[in-house]
Image 1 (cartoon, chains in turn brown, orange):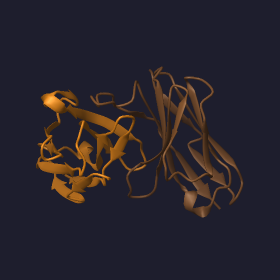
Image 2: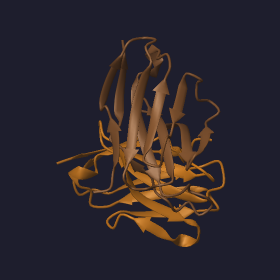
Image 3: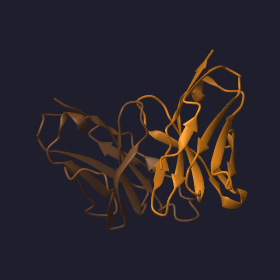
Length: 117
Length: 108
């Protein structure tokens, strides 16, 4: 089945120790999104790629970086995790951006729960 | 800018109905609805587009009022499996902005 896969599902890192989360998709979608979700809150968009074009949200900390080496893979790098970065990180894909028709749904991976000690 | 959902939480008995509302301060191109069960990823339910077109879940209905910049999700004859947090998402050119969320609990 076509799907969005995230690894690892659970990640424990130390304060200040760089960590990389990965996402892969077999849907051949053009757009890949990274969201941060904290308990009882809505997913918060960090950045997204439309093909190779990178789009960073204005309030995403510089501590967060992303790479998309090819259509299938996307990585989230947290350079120096702080205690406030502990959260669920969700990767999602869509065939194309919503656009003015808004007609493309997003498919989410299972998420990576990050703990910072 | 984040859409506001109401109510924040709903508790139902199996078989009861519920309405979840989503209100935006900005003009809407479309509204997406997702359900997220505890500890899981959000799952797409449906999209409502300008002009009345809908795409998505067969057993869930929704409305989209472009003028009022609102959408409502109608859950009828609720089942235990409907429990979770519901998010609306309003589409911008290149992304979705998720609403504040509504937590729904269905009990036997």
